[in-house]
Length: 80
Length: 387
Image (cartoon, each protein chain N blue to C red):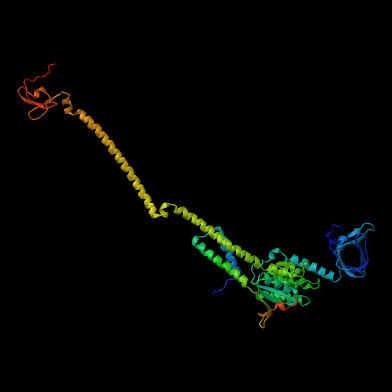
């Protein structure tokens, strides 16, 4: 659906910018409507990212060529 | 002598002997070695902080300042800290390294890097077993599940620990495996935590381009890593809290952003509407027909006034005409004739005004108030004979 998905940081930074620009009232009407729409989309996108996020935990091992290789890490198996 | 800085904060190795605790709470003892002895006193306040049970014959390190005992003029040590040998050596090594790195500027605030606000990947450099990694992952998951946790397992105690930790920090930087590093371990004895007082680890942290949070032991434990790191966390869980934003707060922020957006937009629209209304109240914009109607009304009004005016003018004229007519009537010759005057007219009907116009013998018509007379002039006289 979305091409290169923007990171949470990019989205929330953009959202902050939009909110403060709209609050300062420094934009033209047509632009303000577009910004409002974009801001609303960012809110739901960011909320969605948080709501659906599942933390990935991996263990990093050095591969044969020295490059890192990710292997699964099951924290639950670890004793307290 | 108390003011001599060289005689403050001195460390003395020796064997405890003659240890006595006075009812006052002060501790008195002698430090001995092969070559000599030094009397020491440890006041109640310092003694309360002692973390081990003293025994005569125990090898210890005492830290304090040298003064002269006035009564017998002998040197003595006001002991502020007393630690068993071994641990004491570590303390000295710690202080020395801390001082050295401090002098080199490794702890300077100017070298501290800001932490990313929303890290996407967090490198955790610690033991893959044990409570620390578990605590960190638990807190990270709870607060900010968006961040991926990349564990670089290392040993955190023993001789191999420092090079492994330093190596992992360098490796994380070389391969940019994350945008933030947390390194540390759970609580333990000072020896257990020692890897994080190692110069190699300190230098690896200092050289790291990725920001480093140091999280060693419990709250009171302070290591060299803590001083060099960009941020010191009291515990591994605390490091995880410092590393990421709290999703609960973020969701609240998003909620507020949503309502601020709506508010800003509605305020803006309301303002625009107000401007628009003000403009629209100019009648020409509000209703073209009404505007024309207005103009039409104006024309009618003017017309009406014109009508009134002309009627009034007409009446005035009519009045004046009557007055004139009345005047005219008063002037009417008939009226004059009725009063007894007469008009004489010649053969051609011309009014005779002079005696010269009607010579004797000429015929004249004399018009009277009632009827007329045809007369022959008997005599024309210049002057009327008075009657």
